[in-house]
Image (tube, rainbow, N blue to C red):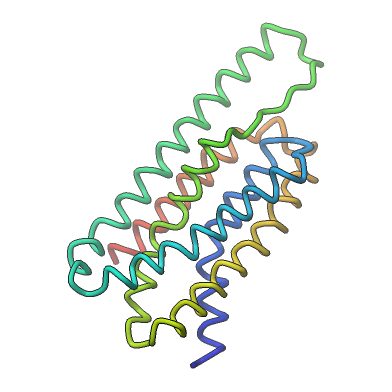
Length: 193
């Protein structure tokens, strides 16, 4: 097994989850450690499950799934982007009407985290197709490594985002809208081109 390739694949698969985790951390100032762990764990589990599903679905559905996966990820992340932009606009209006000094932080909900986990990992279905030449134990090892790397890197970036949130909190909604859309567009372009 080519461990360098597995390592590079693991890091590249984790990038979307890392980015979304960092934005979550920025949006929810002083995010509790349990939520940082939950986000990271969910992202890691999803990055393990999606390639596993892709592996077992195999080539019989590859042509059908492969063409839709980038579009599904793009639509989910665009919806998250629109929601973040709407929340940002609402927060700006509310702060103008209320006390501008009032310190408020947005809370990331569990359903939002689940949707993010699916949206950032759906393109990982294709990775399962890449490793169809491996036996089941080897493939599960590779997918496990992808999940662990995603967990670790998402934990670090979510924690970091939470720590710098005070400096970026005013713009968190706009940043998240831009990042969600950019990640979705990246997945779409990679899948189409």
